[in-house]
Image (cartoon, rainbow, N blue to C red; front, top):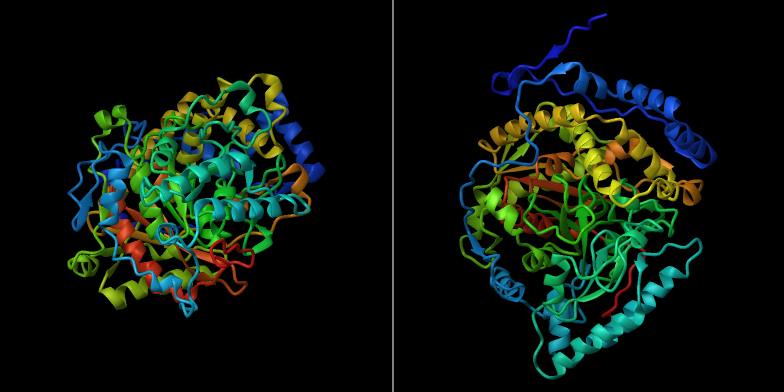
Amino acid sequence: MYRKKREMLPVEEVDISNIKYTPQHIQAPHLTGFGFMLFTWLMEAPLIGSLITSFLKHKNGVTEMLKNTVIPERPMFRPEFPPQDPETGVIVLDEDRHPIARLEAAMECLPLYDPSRHWNPDRPSNFLYWTIRDYAHAYRSDITTPLIVAERIISAVDEFNGKKPPVPLLISFNADEVRKQAADSTERFRAGNPLSIMDGVFIAIKDDIDCYPHPTKGGTTWFHEVRTVKQDAVCVSRLRSCGVILVGKANMHELGLGTTGNNPNYGTARNPYSFERYTGGSSSGPAALVASGICSAAVGTDGGGSVRIPSSLCGIVGLKTTFARTDMTGSLCDCGTVEVVSPLAATVEDATLVYAAMAGSSKADRNSLNPSPLCCPNLSSNNNLNILQSVRLGKYTEWFNDVSNNDISNKCEDAVNLLSSNFGCEIIEITLPEIEEMRTAHIVSIGSESLCGLNAYCEERKYSQLTLDTRTSLALFRSFSAADYVAAQRLRRRIMYYYMEAFKKVDIIVTPTTGITAPKIPLSSLQYGESNYETSGYLMRFILAGNLLGLPAISVPVGHDKQGLPIGLQLIGRPWSEASILRVAFAVEELCLGHRKRPSQFYDVLKAI
């Protein structure tokens, strides 16, 4: 029997004033333990599996959108951006320059460093984290050496690894390799020749990014057996050239296909604010290492909030850059259209410095996308305040308030109001249609691209060695057809239009980073994992425009809920506008510093020195 198709209006004809927000709900079973094992077996069974995936897609509107809807727009197979006006009040870093030269230019953007702020015995009670410039000051002033700090970090890592049940933050860690890098850095300081402001600074690398000589496993038990690491990823090589000490490969949700950070293969990283709760994922280890004070920064990947979600849940800063802003060569996800490599850091200042060192598009992306110049906000300029006063903040209130806990929307709204009352930023109500359609387009895109990238390395017997969570995700992804993928790219073009229209009225879109604070870890999930799409839906509620559309976004901590769990505010910017969102992020961080507190699990590696 013929079923009448739903026909979407051409996007230019949609009357946004008539759009009604629909609260988002994902319908899928919550599974752990034996029930999860049985469900996975059924999902992978040829006939039963297809019936289950068809049912789940129908219940969540995926089938209706992909197969029963006429989408008039042409496909957009990767983010395409209209030309952007130059950012104001910035210093251009020039991505053709050496990372050290870019770092020096970025340093000119920052306010003058005042050692007394952190090194004074009577330092402010709201002091949270040592910054990269604090480490640089300590080394240059002979207060300590990278080698001494390395021993403290090694002790902290060993303490984490010794906990029961195991909660390893690093999947690959070699204490002797860390000592060697630290000794080399210490010798450079003794000779008076540090390479850069980041010489001797400790940074962790997520386990889906190459960092020689460590293997890249992507959180699996076997990926290093089929893919050999011969050199650093491009972004890692840039950091290494600045004298950064690379501590190892950080834990993650297997293959990045999850938002909690659960990993039965090595043990699930725990949230430093509460060991009974998730860090968020998939960059779980990087976020926990930074939040606990062990590393100043880390490098993660973000294809569906995997930098911003754990940053929000762990109370740190997570910058997701514009698509193709940084060369992805040497990461497991270097052929997709939704993923980037990006920094997680304790402060916005440190995120800015790491970004300045590691950013820079590949030659192919520069030729095809023509990115705007790589910039940092000039915070030392007298014009900085005037620029902040002119910022227009877009807020879609119904979406903004669609959270599990009013503490989240209230804290985020307080932060936005502080920007308005302290700097005069204008808050403008906007509407962003087709949020559910964006979710569908994203899961089809990231799912199809992940499966394509994995097929080259994964024989049939290897699939059975993946976690149950990953296997159920892959079973769902296999159900997507080529026609589904093309339909998703048609939706990408529609939704890009809505956001580009919104950016004609506003400069930055503000949302909570997540719709839930750190969820509890079920004990039954530690051995076999967990599938909880409802939780994932809350974690990804405000995330997807950054990935499907390739827009830059940053999560900044703004306070805590009544249980003491961190809350993040997300700033979404125009294409290539990292400097603009960093400027506002600096302001948010300063305004909300008094509302934040350190996690209960914290290692002050400079305190005793």
